[in-house]
Length: 487
Ligand code: NDP
Image 1 (cartoon, rainbow, N blue to C red):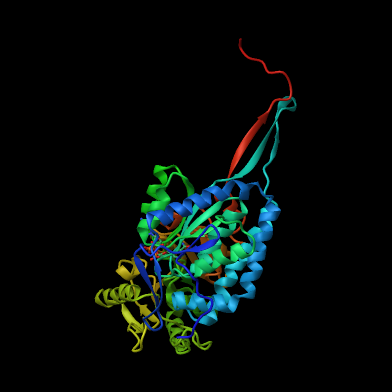
Image 2 (cartoon, rainbow, N blue to C red; image 1 turned 180 degrees about the horizontal axis):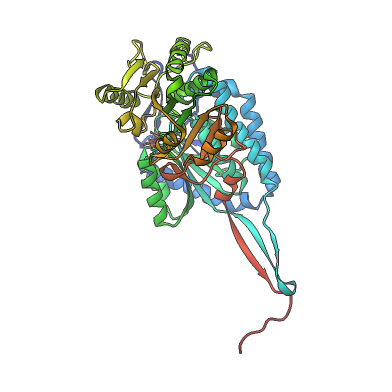
């Protein structure tokens, strides 16, 4: 293993400094490509959690009192620093997650930098309104910070998730305590370090490690005004309920089982690209993946043929090798979850047309897997697998496809491939999903709102919409003349 000088030097980052408390439960950091331990952090003890909450609370009023332009300048400086250190941060992200370096160089630190730049740019433009009333009276609204926010992340995009939450929160004058997934604890620490180097005052962005109970302790603390979670639906339900007890604001970015519709008139090559991007990028560990690929019967055979051809181009290997385009699963646990789903698919009668097996090498590698002849009632068509498993279903007409696409409790994303422009927009309008794609799949630029409907979530990340979720409006009524009263 190379010696990565970029490794964080402590478990937590609080009040501008790395913090260690060896009393916390040790958490081993495993490199998914080898199964070897590469680092160890400690879960936050109650004392560390208290320290983070104190630091975030202490820092918040002064941070909110700065002008938006000043706050934004710090965020934009952090974005520049992240871009300048992209190589080193991408290597760390690869070590944390096992994702191929050819992905992490373009999709992780860089998208985090985009968020910091975008919200840094918006920070100085945040305003309230002036509302004229009768007789010269008026109301003005002030857009104010919420206070201390908690961010809790999943393990698939640790740098991006930290930045997607930190950037709008900090732009609006909040401070944040971020808890990464215990599986991928390293990258968020570097985000905290860089924000501090960029000028964020101590306590503005803090990172604490730990399992679910550390997240739960943060969520239930009365000093916390808002919780933003990226995770599974069952965790989302728990965290939402805990936040509700304190009537806290929430953003919930949860799981999905998204449909991807391919009509007879689609460009097959693009549709196959969409299905590959929507099932195998990041080894299939993407919440918005289009895992139910509905292909119209007229092109089903051609679609499956081209897919089989293109799968031969998957390069499974060392994620730090630029040639590798398909890496390991994040952990042995996740690999076993996915292998169980594959076994269920076979047992329930789906036709395995590609992959399905663990790869014979060190680490947590699984072949890109495709099932055909999947039916709506099969477990693999109903439950989120969160791995490289594509289910191909077929359909006769649009009405049938739409009804089946929407027959899920999830509503994160949905896609359609067709050359018929009216059908494309009709289908997009009919999808019960927060993020829809026409002739593309899984783009997530910071300029566009991202989030789910139904069980897939509440609130939106990215775009101007995120500002609404990290700020609150205060209305100030102003009387311009004498005030009457009944007596
Ligand atoms: P989990 O729901 O298991 O965990 C998410 C985070 O919540 C982790 O940091 C976890 O800690 C923490 N957590 C667990 N229990 C609690 C609790 N009671 N209170 C507070 N925090 C808690 O998700 P995974 O990490 O396994 O990630 C995969 C899931 O995330 C998938 O369902 C996927 O769809 C979803 N996801 C959604 C995205 C979106 O934007 N909509 C994007 C990426 C993923 P720990 O695990 O360390 O114990």
